[in-house]
Amino acid sequence: MGDIRVIAHYGETRADDLRVAWNTLIHQRKGEALFYQSPPYFDHLGQRDQKCALSLAVFEHESAAAGVVPLWSADATLAFQIKKLRLAALTYSCLRVLGATLLVPQSPAVFEQLFVKLADRFSQCDLIEIKGLPTSSELWNFLCSRSQLRKRFFVYIPSGRRMCQWTDVPDTFDLYMTRFRRKKRYNLKRQLARLDQHAGGSLKLQRIEHAADVPLFMDALERLTSRQRMEGIAQRELVDLAQRGLLLSYVLMSSTGPCSLAFGTRFGSTQLVHLFAHDSSIEHLSPGTVLHTLMMRDLIDAKVVRRVDYGFGEPRYRLGNQLEERVTVMLVRRTIANWSGIMAHATFDGAIDVMKQMLRRRREKDSSARGDDEPDPVILSRGNMFRQFYQRICTNTAISALATAAALVQPVAFAATDKPDPVRERGRYVVTTSGCNDCHTPDYAMKGGNVDESKWLTGDALGWRGPWGTTYPVNLRLYMQNLTEKEWIAKAKTLETRPPMPWFNLRRMTDNDLRAIHRYIRSLGPAGQPAPAFVPPNQEPQPPYVSFPAPPK
Image (cartoon, rainbow, N blue to C red; front, side):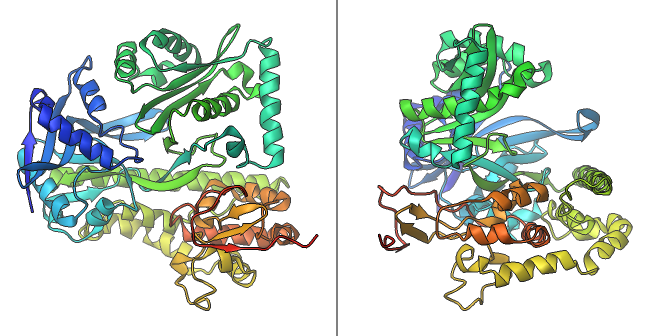
């Protein structure tokens, strides 16, 4: 099968034959986001002000390097924190796997061999951390399986499953703008004109990619962000990133100074955006939205990258983006001390999540009592919240270890889950009888509706082609995660989409039915992959697709 060799000293990782093999593996994954796995970023870490303990795990097959995994030994912190107030923290010696896509053969046997080797070689480390791991990946499936790895590690997900966003960069700016409705396109042009007028016609987008550009960016960063957000962004490091061709940031300038900025890096065909910031005094002029629009136009015109990845969270500029569920995974060594630490952290985070939901429900109740539009009551029930909290610990022994905590929350959980939810059931009925599954659930019509409910409304790769172009049924399970109930009702009442979506029927639905649909779909949780992007009429779509004839003249 092969052998795993660990190169423990950074200097030895610069051998010519090893770098050739590493770059070849990167080239074979062309099109993927591989910034953190790249040799230039690895070398950047090696030249930081605070030297990193870098090493490399090499998978060798028949005396040749068939896989490379860059590693970084550093401390990891589990913070007990409420917003910006840190109450306490646990610090562990950590071995970080750089990048979530492992440049090794994607097989359970290789994964197990790799992590066993790392556990033995780095015996001083309490845990192995992997950030941004897609839940659709082979590695995630392996970590969730009953492998021998469980005898050595607890698998802990400190932040739970979170959505990440990214967008493809189309060939032309006109194609990019077709992702938005006519009203949104008008608003974007209006926002640009208003901000430019405010700046006296001096508005200018500055691309930051060379070392000489860094002082301008640092000045903008100091003006537009807090000291806390600037931590970890040092001028010397940005200069080094630029010299290695890894820096790709933007500043929107006016005659009076910076209006907004985007801090980003790049490798290959992907840009990673780490931070947006803007001048709060002109927030009413949408400087962040204008920056993002101009940034996308520059990326398209200059053919700089093919994909923009926004990472964890829900960026404000998310229209037209794709969603992907990712996790940060910690493989924590099986000791009583480590177990106690992660259980305390999970219990604290679970309690904070429940309190947040209770406070939000209270605010919504108060808002409803004042006669405001009815808020979004679909956030996870307490029972569901604690179930997600339990799922952060992916081990069989977690249930027994949580018995005490479960005894405390069990009455609340059962009270929330045993009682039927009539609004949710109404939503299920409306979704079923209105034909939503016919398009938005793969093979639903072909199988006579005999599709497991866990696969409902996950979108479809079957295209619908006509004079309007080629459209694809949206993954509603992901789509609804970005919308509150109030936002959904407002959107449904004004929706106008391309065929064959019957948007006119959606507009005629009552608020109660729309509210029920939202609650039902949100209760299913995120699942599946985003649907393919719209294909304009003058482009040939990838099969499969259904062709509609042109309407009679």
